[in-house]
Length: 367
Image (tube, rainbow, N blue to C red; front, side, top):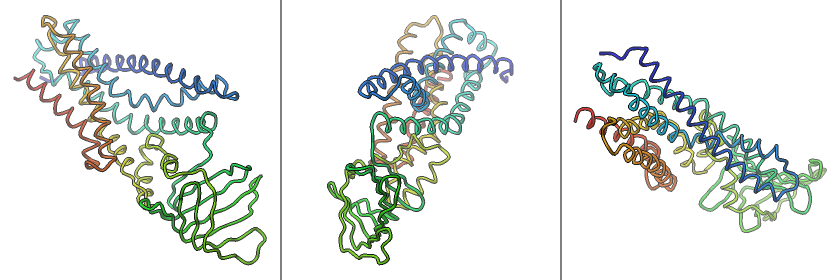
């Protein structure tokens, strides 16, 4: 017997409504805590108004919301199944001859569609908002002075000098991360009001403690006809290797559609793109993870009202949800440190949860 379209729409509508309600509650709680934290940080600054803090909290919300999506999928599915069981609607559906797979199908389908929507639409919007949030954070709360951009042409870095408003722009075509050496380097010096004053071209540059060292350099001052060749040029800097790595765009600030190109650019330039690859593969695995969360919710929620231990099973389901989250974070950390392959680090949580949910449902339904 096939599930009717009317019942299909009814189950899907109930689940969507419960999921939106769950997201609204979770988003409200997260926004409150994030805003309080931003207010605490802004309290140390005199030029950060309340409206800007509220705006920054909203800009950060989509990125945090994507972390909460699996929990919202799980909790809303558990609540939906609990409602249907409490109202004896599932009893009526089962007595009509429908199997558990038939009334699970519309809810699993909704979870899959939400996963695809999250990856293709919500993620790019959230990445754009998070990039704006980090820009405002760096400007008003962190006051970072070094800016790094990675393009197809190589690495671009802007450094503001401490003693004045002058700035230095550095470009390197290739990088050796093991020795932190930069090749085919060009350095442009600007004074106040972006007045160009000097250019240095070097075959190699090194970043050491508090100093850029340019080897085999050619120096040109503005208005100087003949270039000057220097064996070594030193330039003071506050930048360190750790700060340089942290200055790169985080995976969360990059749209799903831009990640493949950025990964290719990082590998061409010489940087390790493993974390970016894991993030991209984890996004691809999200629809499967969302479907697995529905199966997990069904495994712990589809219990007849007469059976005892329902609340205990629901508590176990919540605990398993957190275990899936921490397992995902742990495996991604192993992948980023090259302990396990990228595919295994990104797809294992979704595959394990999905297979576990199917196994439990098969045992409950047919076992």
